Length: 394
Image 1 (cartoon, one colour):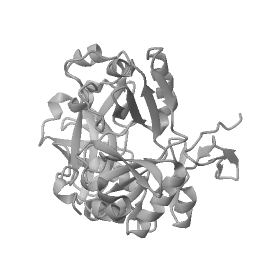
Image 2 (cartoon, helix red, strand yellow):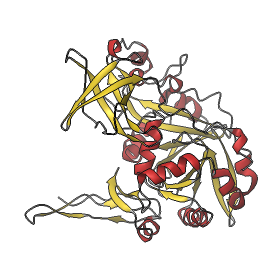
Image 3 (cartoon, rainbow, N blue to C red):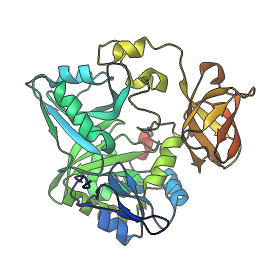
Image 4 (spheres, one colour):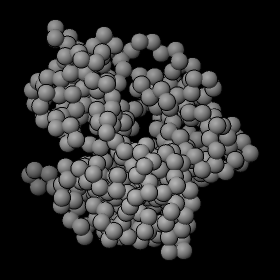
């Protein structure tokens, strides 16, 4: 079977060959490389496949150091693998209101919002950010693994007067995250970073090129997302490193989002899981009709996404069983890791309502043995700076 090819933002796909025990070789589907791949390789990054891309998992400093730098200083992530879709036209707003779970009409140009793309049964096809560029123009930032299916789904469900364009290949992205991000970026981008409200964005320029700067973030810390053409992002990446940002990989990005109790598509969210169970009510409109709304609102008292704080540093793994004291199964783990900011391991799990109250004692049974845990309210980490406007002056 020929390897399928995946297009990267400014990068080239590469087929990967692995050597199995006994000397047997096999070839995976081609992995895409972002425009920043040579930069990561020069920095000694460790790579792994992620959503069809060969992405940096960590650098020489290690995941814990990168995580701690995001909590105390500033790091820069390569997020060029994310998908970017434009919806434009006189019917774009009405179509988006039908497609996504969040309320879009109240958004003013220059504001953005987190939402879910759902199927008719209330299952989550993707989680995304909606940017309102103009009254009839919107940008959707979607996950790399679902970009193709998202484009297909959206195209089939919009009006003829709405133009849907996949801009992923022409758009690259980096994220600068941490309480020191304003201080780091202000000499590079100017005062735009000192004026952005939480979940807002603005256009700016760098070396004569247009960029879009937003302030949302996935880490719980103050931070900015920079969108531009691949060659501009390459220059911005180098500028951030020269200014003192620590490069961070997907390993630290995962531990940071897990401490904040944020979902990861394919772990906490998926087409077979009703969106109501996720507990992310801020992403679900209570008033409008959207695809899947009836199924979401009709959902009964099923499992709910719950935080688990483990008694030690050993982490649970996706698929581990959550067990009550009487050895009956209460749920299943969706994500787990050591949490550097907490000094212990934490996990997210879908747990039955009777076992999900904060303070409940549960066990986690996995291939490596049994772990003790306590249910806790989310987020695990409560000292994040994401909403701290006092840090904007750098």
